[in-house]
Image (tube, rainbow, N blue to C red; front, side):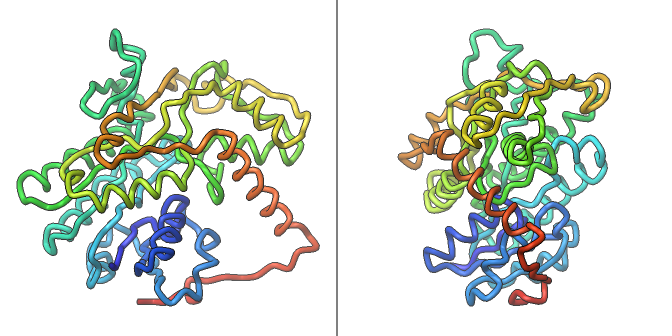
Length: 346
């Protein structure tokens, strides 16, 4: 089987490539390297069944050329991260909507099974504003803030991606799945765009204060990236999943304060935990969700399993990777240069 992974040099994309290659598939990654990195796929540079094309999903001819000969598409390419969304709203909207439109047009032309990555962000403030709602189910309500709050642009674009994908499935019978990822974490993830776990780990290992935004009592549920890619694979091999939306996450909430304490404990550091107001970090009027817990019933009923790796496993893996990366970047370590030319072009 030949897979096209848009965003294939990104955090989830690189792990998905590893997973599919291990099963004997061919993988063609398509990435503009704006948030993805050659470092995440450096170990695949000489792999005979892996190829990389540097390109933008908004460039449809380049995307079409890359998709030629592929059997399936996993569309992960997107503008991500709270900081990036706040700083580059136009890029966020155009990349996420136009890029998905191009992917689905290509999928329609060749009737390619396609998974479109969405996000738990689409639920917005539902857990805080809807009575008697304890978890977030795929068919449940979603509540977003005002359009003047730039923070909600990402959620709106991914919701539109879902609408568009399901429309192609309904109207044109294109086999499309929408997957809502909940705080996927693991090795190779960068904290550059506001991802909390790698940010905390990097700060702790550097002997810096761990920075918690807000009061830290907000809760999140974290999913190991290896669980996430296993679920993606299972969904794409389950005919009943096509034309539907699925949560990919773990329903085990932890407060950000507790997360910071666990990181400090597991890194063996004694750094302080510093609370920073949202306004100072993101500007006046920033809105965040207090809770975001997925209902995993639908996924488990469809593929017979759900993500299970514990938070301790996630943190151990992230910390080990961060320590290895610090060692590689030490002044004594040799620096190896890598360019896109090092990868197969087709």
